Image (cartoon, helix red, strand yellow):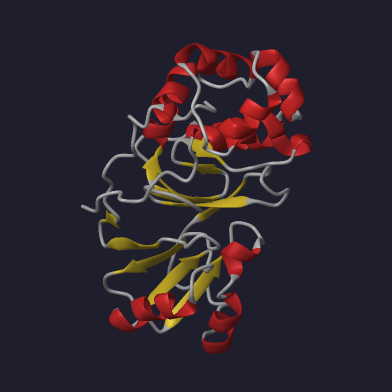
Length: 250
């Protein structure tokens, strides 16, 4: 078992800002609806203060968020559960992204000298360390969406490996438009790589014109089996059941 030691990608201020922008509200419009000054809204979105429970209720109502879940995030009383990265003979290596990087994941089998990399956005040397440790010589690459923080090490991988090879892995590609029009998720038996579709306790950012599509894509993923593990593009790993119960956007 591996303990989820990552801090949440989004705090209360991030959630407020994403929901506000997704709904097409500027700061002044939100301030008017919740009865606060625009300056205070900006301070909240920049982590400078957290409003009272009563004001949080107003935020939840205006921004179409789940109030109990929003309270738990604001009060820092909820964290994702401890999750194993082993699925029979399959194993997922987590490489947590730095500030300017997305999380990178490497899927391998205990008896196969090949692997699939999902979103190689971290420093190439970190990926190479896993390859060397497990004698991986055959590599497939999957990209959830074409943003630089998810693809930074792709040129180096292409230079040293035949990345066109899909290797001995079976998975399903799921169209999940919203964060970008062509965003996808990759479903393996028991786990899904969700990119920037959703994070533990939050969702990815999406332009107003794609916001409804984004939330629809989130709902589609969370309609699947409750015990499926979700590997997000940023922040800690979570599960479908956990997000159904704790994500303010649900």
